[in-house]
Image (cartoon, rainbow over all chains, first blue to last red; front, side, top):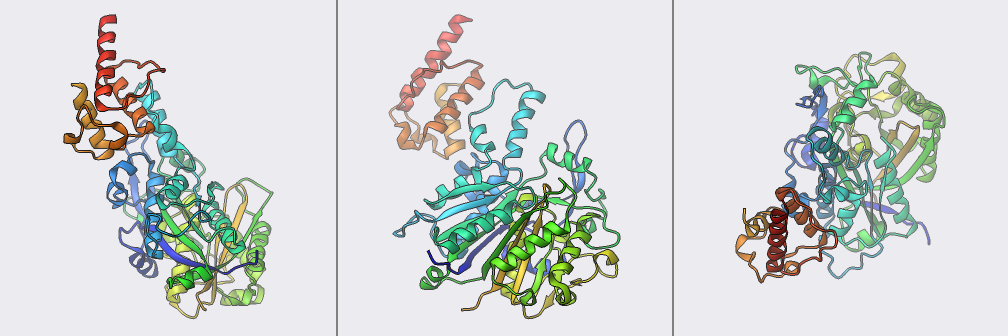
Amino acid sequence: MKPRRVAITGLGLISPYGGDATDFFARLCAGESAVRYLLTDDRPRPVSMPFVCCPDFDANAALGRPLAILMDRFCQLATAAAFQAWDDAGFHRARNDEDRDRWGCSWGSSLGGALAIEKAYREMWLNGRERLPPSSVVMGMHNSANAHISIQLGLGGISTSHAAACASANIAIGEAFHRVRSGEAVVMLTGGSDTPQAYGVARAWEALRVIAPASADHAARACRPFASDRAGLVLGEGAAALVLEDWEHAEARGATIHAEIVGYGTSCDHDHLVRPSAAGQVRALHAALADGGLDAREVDYINAHGTATAEGDPTEIEALNTVFGPHAPALAVSSTKSMHGHLLGAAGAIEAFATVQALSAQCAPPTAHLDDRLDPTCAGVEHLTSASSRPLRAALSNSFAFGGSNAVLAFRAATA
Amino acid sequence: MKSIELIREFLHERLEIEAERITPDAVLAELGVDSLTMLELIFEFEDRYKIDMPEDTPFPKTIGELITLMEGIIASNQAAS
């Protein structure tokens, strides 16, 4: 099968700002943070941290109660984002005449149905319940999101989930991209979702001492990637979905093409579970450029992994300086995590969403809270501290996960 | 609570089926009650009445059969206790 071009024809997301895709990107460009202070009523000690929620998300309204009631929240967010992307692509949810047996779903999530599993334990160990409803099985399973999406959209090809911590969605999207490019699939619905507010998850991250300190008054500015006073990452819940489609198929039906996905590169640091390695990231970046047939000088924007941890940020910039060499000073870089937080297994999805919108709008969003406070160890690239309208030919989106799993996606602005 | 009321409440909450459609001769499959929903309903029933439904209980086909089954089990549990 000859390699094909792959169009992005559908975008969907559950926005922490509550609005639609256009509103989300406008707020990113305005440098507006969605980070808020989260205080739960958990026993024995509440979760108290900066966090990004999707408070306006109404699962029953988005999915209908009979469907929503059988899903964990990560799956509700996923399916609602998938529906949006599907509608945006101009497809009908019900199978019409077209054969969707070679259309599939590849979903990314780090935690899967963690909330459902946690609820089950809580009911038994804390509330003394002796048995669990049978739906606990299908709500807790990691592949519930892709399974529901495939059922709802009538996708007869592969349906799978990818779990690689913070690289989950980039890997899910990259694997979906390769399937369309190879001709195995005509259309792939892909993306990611996660809900790190699960009590056991949030408290575990806290213990790792990488979470920005809690402060009800200053939560919005809690996540400051690349800044000299950065103090750690901010977790968030959410979901974003993309429709990847064979280019000729998209053109033939007159679909709107938001951007082209051209490359996908992966690597493992094979070094340390949590300490990032520039060498491993360099290999993933080189692999993505090579896979996309991109010259480094064609890349005009990078949506960085940029979590705002002490070690992660300078390591990523070191990798970018190594790969882009003399082009690095002209390379626009931003971490939109400063505004939408770190969605763990969904990070790559919401950042692919932002990157595609940047290419489509020819405007790169900034890193919020970075004015006049750039850490010298993160210097060498053009850090955007405000949105920048400029010609953007190609862009990368980085995800560098615990476990040393690295995944980089490469996109081009849509051109016939 | 009478069995029919429990069934109505459950099917309304899960499948948004109006109470008027839950009549003894209504066929469960036609109402959209699949095997997973039936397992959930049995669980709800067991949980509510603190009883165990025998594992080999055949799935009823109609609301009427379901009511007969539930009330039979409630009666035998009350007789046993």
